[in-house]
Length: 296
Length: 237
Image (cartoon, rainbow over all chains, first blue to last red; front, side, top):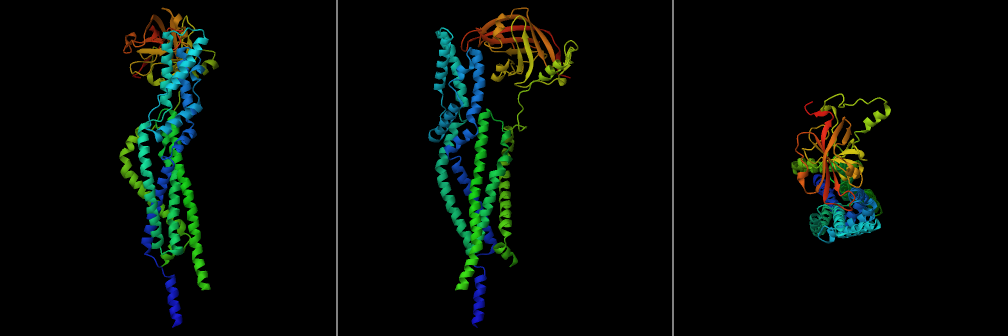
């Protein structure tokens, strides 16, 4: 009689305690999707929601060097039309200054209203450089000469203002400010949903080692999705073919988008680490339980 | 029962299940993308170039110059001395930024490369042919050819141009000669100084004026030339 009872107990221990298999698998799948959405929000938080990322993209895309090359070509032409050595016009401009100014423009997008800087200081510096050079050449700086120099400096300012700027800055600024408000709430809600889904997956699968195994399915799937987003989606977009001028902005945009997708790899690594831990525990837990049963 | 043990115990499930999940997820994503984004696919194409690498400016004179260096005899080019017209299909039409010739103004020191387009890059390297208007042409097209250069560099000696002097434009498809008939300084906003709609071949050279003035000036110096010789491009062939 006692033996029969023990046999029955053993069978009940082995017997599955959770919901049906399709429900458990369905929940695990849903959880993996929620993890992927959560990963996307995290990526957006660290990229589009982060001004430092945009600044880093400008630096990685060698924005300063590219713009300097364009300005150098334009200012060389202006110097050939105005009678100065190109170094006179280019003197106040450098790749480092361009980088600093574009970073200030990015700050303006995130902390201000994305207003375009008219770069009056560049005009003033170039005008002063030309005036000094004219004096050095022994030219009398009359009112008509001043007017001609002002016109040249204005062209230089206009070019600098256009090239050292983020296109559609004020519109981007509006989006960024809205995103800033919504992102936190979105992240918090998604974190709660994801945690609830993880808990449900664990419970529906029956908890213990099997629950952890189903959780690992969700995390491994999220890892695969993250790595695919991080490595395959960007080349598929073929953004190199984008017809965008000037080249400095195109390079900047490509760096920005590529970096955004690459960020998925970092999230994928975190998911992969969690997956390994979960698989490890799902293997160890039944053994620990078996050992505790023997001792008991 | 067997199925249950696979999902809960078999190692292969740790690979198979996530892979199947991922495929389903991508299937859903592809379906959603197709449904929501396909109407905008045409719009996206507008902003895409056909080739991945945009072709840079070409040097259409390089082959001709190479041939001239290698051969002691006159190179075989579709020249005016041999033909009155040349089929358009036989020549490589220049694109924006291409070097397609050289220009020499008799009686002056002007002898410089000739580019198609008047971008800053072109004007830094030689004279530029105005290309922003459908009516203007290149030598041989039977229209107004509008060529500009900077007054402090390539066209600084245009001040010494005189009526009767010859302007020679050597292109990759033929050599053209024009004769200077007039010249004058005009205000930079005076559009009556040139007629881009003329249907007979003529050449206008143009630079900033006064020549030695510092800074951007408000006057331009125009040199007008009549066509003398050179093969006409036949657009029907």
